[in-house]
Image 1 (tube, rainbow, N blue to C red):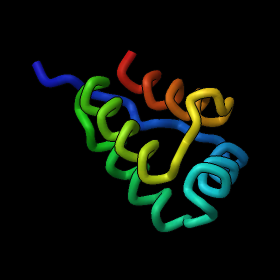
Image 2 (cartoon, rainbow, N blue to C red):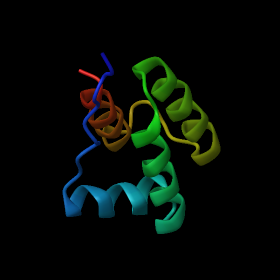
Image 3 (cartoon, helix red, strand yellow):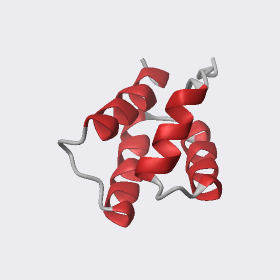
Length: 78
């Protein structure tokens, strides 16, 4: 059986905040990352991708929005 994964769901407010705060107001980069995250098939792979984004954008682990974004992505795989 193939596993059917939900897409990551974000409210308009969350999309705006994440794009602005985590992707330096770059909607195109946010959209590309979001599309990539929705194409990934496992939480482990998603974590690796998120870690690469964290490195590129200098996200801090203690940032509540970073924690929220990780949780929203993880929810897709639960």
